[in-house]
Length: 90
Image (cartoon, rainbow, N blue to C red):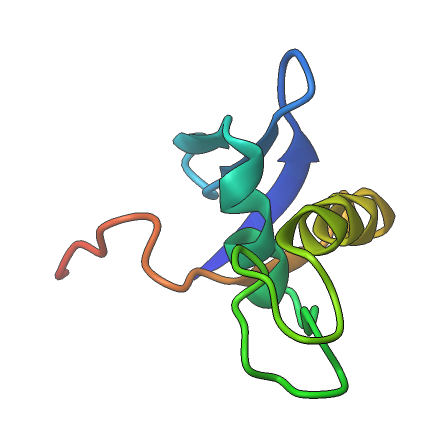
């Protein structure tokens, strides 16, 4: 199922399912994981972090802000649900 990335209230992000159900990402620590599902890579040099922990090339703070900027560019994009919504069997 495809879901859509949208800006949420008060500086948050949310994903919306086709049925209108949504999931809110309030914590900036959640942004790297969300951005990864849209193709973002936290550190191209080592690829040894998920963006929430420092690596030898970047701090977690730098990567979290980079993830937020990446999400801003991708606002409105649809992507395959990585498991944010339960799938119902039909």
